[in-house]
Length: 582
Image (tube, rainbow, N blue to C red):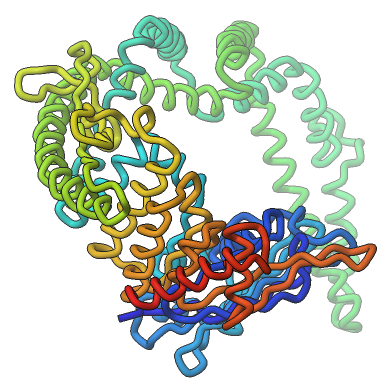
């Protein structure tokens, strides 16, 4: 049952494409055309719809933007529909509309179900909607990392659980190892830092400053340094306020204000305004008496002892020595002391921390060893099933004697750089200890060899197709798009690929960009991409081929001649055979 169907894509100003409408239907659709006609526009456009990188070079010269719109049938409740609804998109009778716009300046916008969304949302939908495979994917299959990913994908949940646990332990081990290395390799620097901190703390402790002490001593030093002037000024002010006992004829402020108060008191009852002034004059008299008393006490309290001044200056010098090194003020020095004491405690505890980390590292290595062994066992079991399934598919792709197998190898290393597996110290990585390699024996008697060395281009194409067909049975994707997956294949092998793609199309939507008539003949529907030129602009269009038009195109693909009788007869024969088998 098809879970979702790519129904249509509309393309405007994308490369050599102008206002093309690519209508797709369930089943098997073949996209053909002459070399350079722009058939890969289907792949490029779909890549944009599914969150691919936006390249401004895709925009036709002179156009403002390239626009790709897609209509995909998605049943309610499907994972893609649920994710789209989470993003605010709306489905119209089970149809999801996707739009991607790329401006000539490189800006990109995405819309999903009528709602503007980040491009990343389209990428999230991709895994649930379409699997795109091209010639670059064939080359990717040559890399051991991709082969391991393929094996893990086939194993499914059996690998997911152990792999998740392994990844968590691996990250923990990396973090502990990094911290342990930092502590051990920088031991000398930390000892030097600790010595400097101890020296500074001892120096501060010897002086024992108090918060704000520097401000207090500065004020005291200023007072002691001008004691005589202060005492003389206080005495003169006191005399001016209350008079000199030895000069009865002298005039002082207190006597004058007191006389003014008595004069006002005598007549204050006659005018409220004058009564108020009399009150204020009385207050002045009281204030003068208070100030005079304080001036007298100030003079008595003033310490003009030179020895005290000397002690204050010595203390200030000691504090200045600290502020030159550890802070602008005594408060800053005390703050530095607090921070340094905490840091020193941390440094002094490094030895204990190293012991803790060492024990934790050993425990994580032991745990990683167990998890890695479990991961290897699961992969080994899945590898046998996966290889058998791919081998069976190759028999359907004109490789009846080919055999596929997986090799899981371990690499021994130094004790400090690995984990122990069955008494051996082996290298480990973020995905386990296994080096996974896909091997191919193309015919009886041939030793299994890595596909990077032992597979031709056509064999590699068929191996990749076989892998995808196996995936379709275990982890189905609604739509498959193959871009010249049949490269390097011809003759009977091409017929077998077409037959297998038609079989796959019974459970999924299959779109194939192909140059091979043997493959195109098996398609339920054939689209022709043609290039036209009006003298100034070259563009490509898409046409649905039916009846005689399809025979003519297959004839061209077979012999390069649309009107060749032999080619037409061969094309009709291909179509008839394909219809019979499908």
